[in-house]
Image 1 (cartoon, rainbow, N blue to C red):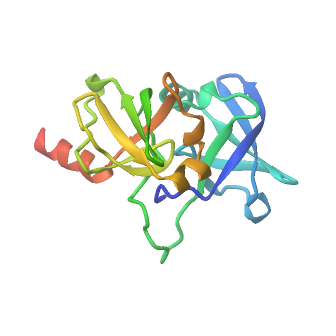
Image 2: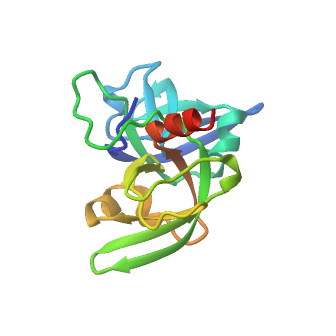
Length: 194
């Protein structure tokens, strides 16, 4: 489980395709604290550390993950938002995030707003995921608040700290991002539809 509070940006240093899997090697400033079999969220996708070498570690994304997320679009040199899983007793500063991306969305607009930024995203509403005005959503692993909620579109505002310390500074119109909708909202929606 994660909170959507990004610890650091990692840099993709190698991508290796093996059958339908993609091995992603990342350079991070916390690699020396990692161990094999540890879970880390990469742009909001929970992946398991399978190898560690110096300041780099490797995770593997399977075909299912590549189809449902933006990880298959990564290039060497790209920055990814990283968060290690929560420890029992940690503060939950963001919201409950599983690291299980529901679907992707496309950024359709970015507006600077006197020192902050408003990003607007559009997604396929046929997958029955819902966003709620002032509710929580996880975008590329970042816990944010929904504004301007519509059936297939919403916006989120970014403060300067988030802009500087996540890969939001690289998101522009046309960029594909990962979405994990609020787990409580998903359970309530499923119960209401029974």
